[in-house]
Amino acid sequence: MVIKNETEYERASERADEIFGAKKGTPEEKELQDLLKALKAYEDDFVKMLKDNE
Image (cartoon, rainbow, N blue to C red; front, side, top):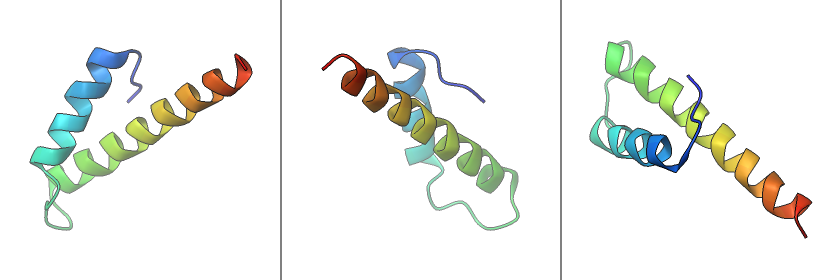
């Protein structure tokens, strides 16, 4: 999963909030892990872009 823009970021963040308490071993827990990885990657790229523009 790759987040490409702010709209996708917001949707992924909202979905992660919805399933935050997912039980271990469920499809929702796997989805949550994928969402969190994608959110972090997007945030890291955003911070890198900001630093590159300084």
